Image 1 (tube, rainbow, N blue to C red):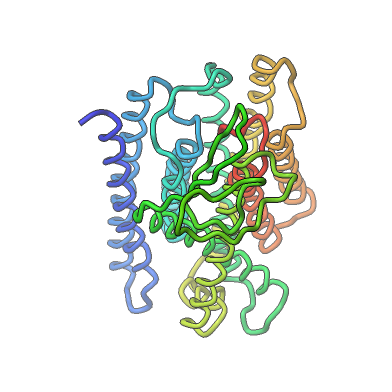
Image 2: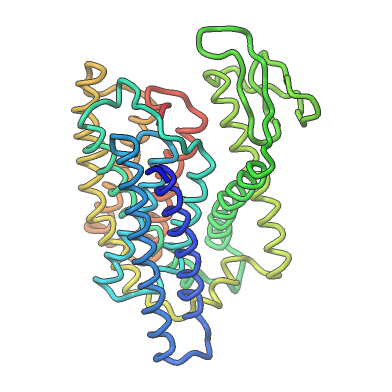
Amino acid sequence: MDFYEISSSLLSISFFIYLIAVVFFGAILGKKRDERQKSKLTTIGIILTIIGFIAQVGSFIFRWMEAGHIPVSNMFEFIYFFSMCLIFAFLLIHFIYRYSIMGIVALPIAIVLIGYGSVFPTEVTPLVDSLQSNWLYIHVTTVALAQAILSISFVAGLLYLIVKVNQEVRSKETSYLELIMYFVVSVITFVILSFSFGAADYEAVFNLPENEDYTDISYTLPALIGPTDSELATTGHFYTGIEAPSFMNGPEAARKFNTLIWSLLSGLVLYGLLRLLTRKRLGAYLQNKFGKVNPDIVDDIIYRAVAIGFPLFTLGGLIFAAIWAQQAWGRFWGWDPKEVWALITWLFYAAFLHLRLTRGWHGKKSAWLAVIGFGIIMFNLIVINLVISGLHSYA
C-alpha cells in the first residue's frame, strides 16, 4: 500500500468517525437525559472527534509524503485542509469554553466539506509553475486556518439565531434563516448527487472546436448547461441543448456552472421534502431541539472567533498574498476575482469588528453578520472557484 492509499484510507476513517461523533453530540439534545448522561455523551463525542482529527492529520501527512509538497494546491486538497482546520478550531473553542453543543453544527459542516471536496479529482498531481514557491506553505495554510476560525463564528451565529429568532410568526428573520437552511441543504444534495453519479461512472463527453487548450470536456453530472459551440459525443446521455452564456471563460467554467445549477435545483427538492416531513419551517423544527443553548456564551464565541480569525486572514489573505503576487506576477495587487473577493472578505470582517466594538452590535446583529461572513467565504470557495475564471483557477 503506497502513501496515497494510506492517506485515502485514513481520510475515510476520519469521515466515518466524525459521523459517529455527530450521533453522540446529537444525543445530548434528548430532553429526557440528565446532566450525568449528557456529560458522558459529550466526553465520548469529544474523544471520537479527537481520534478522527488525528486520523485526518495522518492522512494529510501521508498525502504530503506522496506529493512531495504540502497538499493544498487544488480544490480537493484545499477543502480537505480547510475542513481539518475547522475541526481544530472547534476543538480549541471546546477546550476554552467547555461548550460541546457547538459540535452539533461544526462537525456536520466539516463532514459536508470533506464530502464536497471528495467530488473533485483526488489524484496527486505535480505543482504548476506558479505554485512552486515557499509562499504556498505560508499563504494558503494561513488563509485556510483563518477562514476555519472565522467559520466558527458562523457555527455560533447559526446556533444563536436558531434559538433566538421568534418562530411563532413569519417574518424577515424567519425567511432569511430558512434561506440559510436551503443553502446548507443544497450543498448536502450536491455531495449526494456527485457520489451517486460517480458510483455509476457517469460521464458525458462534449466535443469542442480544436484549440490549444481543449479538444473535449467531460461532465460527471447530466448536462443542463453545455459548453459553448460544442456537441455531445456520448450517446444516450441527457442534454437540454442549452449552451453556457458567452461571458463564461471556457468550457471548464460551463461544466462548473452546470454543477452549481444541479446543486441549487436538487437542494430545492430536498428542502421541500424536509418541509413536508417536519410540517414546519426547518428553523422552527431545530429551535425545539436546541432550546437550552446559552446565548451569552454563544455570542462571546462569535466575537472571539472573528477577533482571532481576522488578523490571521489579514496576514494570509492580503499581506502574504500580495508578497507572493509580486514574486509570481510582478505586481502586489491586481483585479483577479479571487483577489477582489479576498478584499471584500477582509472589509466585511473589519466592519464586523468596528460595529461590534464601537456600535455595540451584540446578539442577533452579530449573529447575522457572522452568518453573512460565512456566506462570503463559501461564495469565494464555491462560486469564484467553480464559475468565474481567473489567475487562481487552478485552485
